[in-house]
Image (cartoon, rainbow, N blue to C red; front, side, top):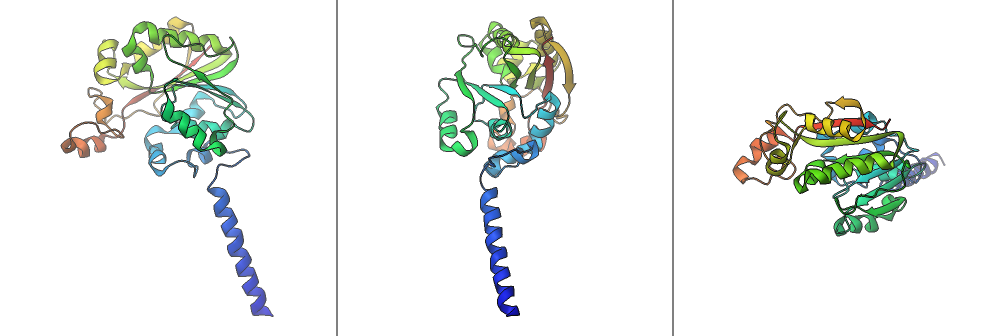
Length: 267
């Protein structure tokens, strides 16, 4: 009887373990912490490997993200941050994706995994400078953009200016514009550094935010990388490694680009 009971308990333990593992393999339907979301099993190993360089938990905490906020993510690209924001905000908040109408890969990613992305509140077309309307005035708690500002500046100074103005308009008083951007050396010509290096100097970004009407609420070095010389095109660095193969090990030793992390607040 004792041995039979032990065998049953062992089988029950294995069964329960299987349930736990199976549950962990899918995004939780309830509340998750930022740490849980950053390490979620729905994220690829390749994307989670970038956490050590991009510090998503610390970055979002610095911006003041809360689970009950209405958040607009600008130009999500491949959805690296969307993988974290969507499950974190799903139970109590709202996530709006302002995405390129040509972002077929991003849309396919969302449709392929409704368990993770099915509760995204809205997807709106966003293609500066023609399409920059982010929603009703004073309706969002936070607007976030990650490594996009240089692309808008490459288009034209007016394009980046239009994005800042649109973010200011949609935010509630007290709302936050959070920016992570590849950093150029101080006081360089922003049009040259944006085009040639895909970088912008921090002083230029802060000046534009203040000119738009924002208050600078914080500057963080969370995503700083002192090993980055700031005079090379960011795509030569990980994860792209777009340069010649013989320089890849050198670029890997540098790591991802040096980045500014800026928190602006609408008065």
